[in-house]
Image (cartoon, rainbow, N blue to C red; front, top):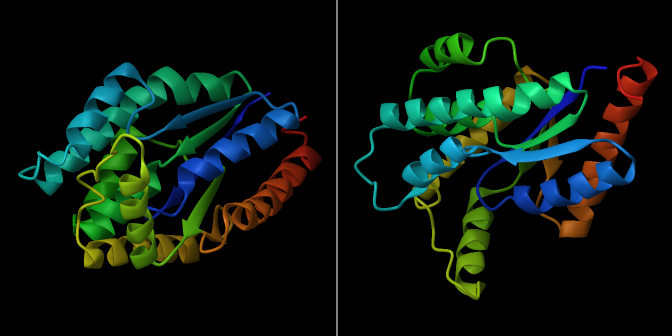
Length: 222
């Protein structure tokens, strides 16, 4: 049995990490073998690259350097974690994947989309999530959540290099996610992330239950 690949996306502060953890528990409760991972990261090499990308001291990093670092981390991630888990019949639940590259480096930073597509074709190839959940939120509210989280943490988490970009950048990122959802409505599902954690998770479960039902009917997940 081939596994399934689910990615979770959204602007900073949209609650992805919380929802991924809840979703992992929910799928485990349904007796699915789940691998929870994230980008950039997921591997020892990827985590080192993550530190470089998100370090707020690296303000001189060019957009192209950023793109190539993300892609390098992703290739290692696919090789070590994602592809093996899918081949073993597991459900891979990943916080961020290729759609973040198009949203952040493409729509947000202005790197040409056709270049990103060619780069993606050369590195990721045919691998694409079977389902992508985008937690949609006004970036103003998302950035407020990020600031509150940083201030309320027992040990200050700080604001990373991507989170510290201006609000217009994050508005462009959101617009990018919305455009991609319009272009691929069968794969990308929007979930309103403006409510409580519990409210958002109820909507998430509805999306996941429909996904599981469809693939169980087709005999792909049993």
